[in-house]
Length: 309
Image 1 (tube, rainbow, N blue to C red):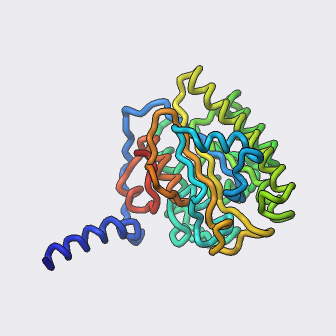
Image 2: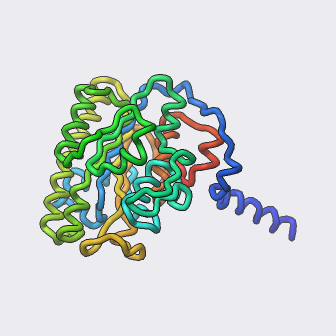
Image 3: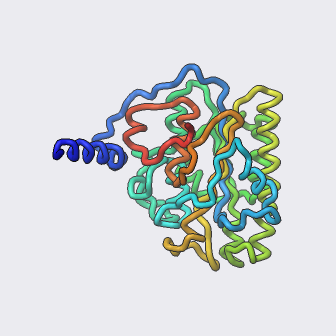
C-alpha cells in the first residue's frame, strides 16, 4: 500500500511540478519542426484592459457572436498574472512563462529575462528558414522590450488604435512592408479610456471605445476568412487581453473584474480543450503547437500548455 501511495505521489509531482523546474536544468536543445505542417499562419489581436462583462451583444456584437461559435474556444474567466500590470501580463502571454520567471513585475521592464525566456516568435524563427514574424502595437513597450530583437518587423513610431488597425490591414492585404506569417497586434485605447473614465460596461467612454475596437476585430477576422477561403491559407485566430479593470485602475489582484479577462481561439477545423480555463502562459505553447514547433527546452521552460486537442 505504501508503495502504491509513493508511486501516486511521484506521478502527481511529475504532472504538477515539472513546469517549476529551475532554468539551470533546461538545457538548450535543437528545435524540431513537424514537416507535415504547411501554410500555417497566426493572427493575435491584443486588446488592453478588456473587462469580461463588457463583452455583450450591444457593446461588442461581433465578438459576442463569435464567442458562441462551435469552432471557437472562449472563456470570460481567463486568468491574469497575480501582478496585474500590463508589462507582466503581455510578457507572460508572449513568452509562455509566469512573471516569476521572466521577471517583469511592472511597466518599466527593469530586470526582464527575455534572453532566457524569449517570446514564442524566437522559436518560430529558429524552426523555419523563411517565416515573417511581425508586431504592430499602440503600447510601445511591447515592441521595445519584448519583441524588437526577435521579430522581422515591429512598428516603431507611436500609433493610435486606428493606425494599428490600418497598419495591420496593410500587412495582411498588401503585404507591405512585410507579408506576415505570424502577426501580433495590440489596441491600447480601451485601457486608456478605463484609466480616464472607468473600466465598466456602464461607462460610456469605455463602451464606445470597445465598440470601435469590435469593428476593427470584425474587419480583421473577415480578412483572415478571405485568406482561408480564397488563398488556401490556414490561419489560427486569437483575441487576448492583459487584464480587466475596476474603477479607474487594475491594481487589485483579488478583484475578479481585474484578474479575469477574455480569451478567444478560433479555427474552423481544430478542437480545443473543453472545460479548461486558460491563463496568460497558454497562448505561446498553443501557437507553437499549431505551428509544429517543439523542443525539450521549450517543454522544460514554458509554464503554459497548448489548448489544442
